[in-house]
Image (tube, rainbow, N blue to C red; front, side, top):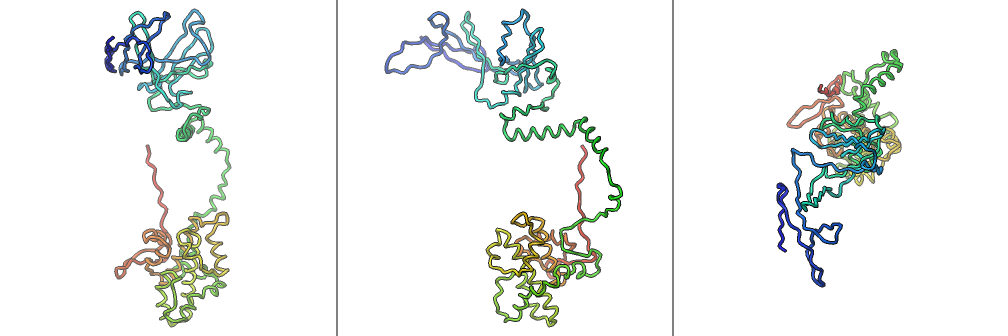
Amino acid sequence: MADKHQNDYMDEGDDFKTPQPLEKKKKKKKKKTTTIETESPRSIDITVKQISEKADRIPPIVAYFSSGYDPSAQSRESPKVAVYQTASRKRTRVVVSPQGSNVEFVGSSHNGEQIARQTCVSVLGVLDKETQTLRILPIAHQKVLRLDTRVKGNEAGDSEAAEEDGEEEKADPSLHTFWTKRAILDDKKRKARILRDDPEAQKALEGKLDKVEVNTSALENTSAVVARNIPPHNASATNPSEAYPIEQIIENGEWSSLQDVYWLLQEEAGAATDGYPAFVRNRLYRLRDNKDETEKETAAGILTFITHLIKFKDVNSMVGLESARSHRFPPTIREKCNRLFKDSETSRLPDDKINLLISYVLVLTLHVDKFKTDFEDIAKDLRMSSVDLRKHFENLGCKFAVENSIRVATLPVPLKFPQIMRRRTKRR
């Protein structure tokens, strides 16, 4: 028997003939054949037509009753069937309402078990025995819808008819078992937006706010002072040395523990200085030429404190841990650093405490350089870029100038701190 086989999804008239099954022979492989068995033991030849989905036609909708309800075995009247679809046909809902019953059966393509992962594609096959033709038709959404029982009146079946393409319907939290983590998170965000835009929720919130007692006298007596993450300062000072008083940064009892650099100056000029930051090494020559012992001892104490602060930052970070492992801190300085810059609840330095430590270091560098400092070397000591360090100088009220092709930071008085700029939200 000759085979005739053609398959074109765009034309319904294309067909193919299935051959008669041959007798099975041993040790020989035979091709698979499509046969349809009828009630009699003989086989029949059929013509298979595969029909593709067309944009101007609604494909068949296949559904089943999960409760076992059989509409053909019930009353004399057929149940009422309603189908709702969005304009783009992305969603479909089927509502079957038996006559004289207070329940109905509802199934949708985007709810229930239909949102589970689809591992196969379902099609509908219709066999016409008289013409010996088998039609393969695509079904709606390539899914078999599940019709669940629902009491009438709990939810309007035609509510989705007016739903637009981009809208989402409320999801049942019990179905989160079949959802991905991203889908669950998106659903929570959507519910938060709905609650925010809900007029009833807004009324309830306004009612709660009306019951809150406001202490107006306390608000009137409160001064609008912004707490800045910088060392102790005097914003109205007329002298740069008084803007950040050194006696409030280094207490009187701490100067005796800050003699390392001063003792280094008493040694010869070739003494080893590798353990000190680059900022300190680059200022030693200036201290050696200073004839005022009081001023020299004060500047040496400030440089020693800068060294301890930088080493404290390195020993509490993964980047500079090796360079600061052998550094020795005086007990009073270590206790002060732990109190100012370390949080007892965590072993690492918080970001706000690191910024405060950097501000202390920059204020001390201004004192050493007479409030006009080149910050290239201290930026390397702090393991930061010059651009990032400029933000910290600006937060201290500093300005920048260029002298001899070198950018320096200065401290004008009275102090003027940068204002906090708030972004304006665009009205929709």
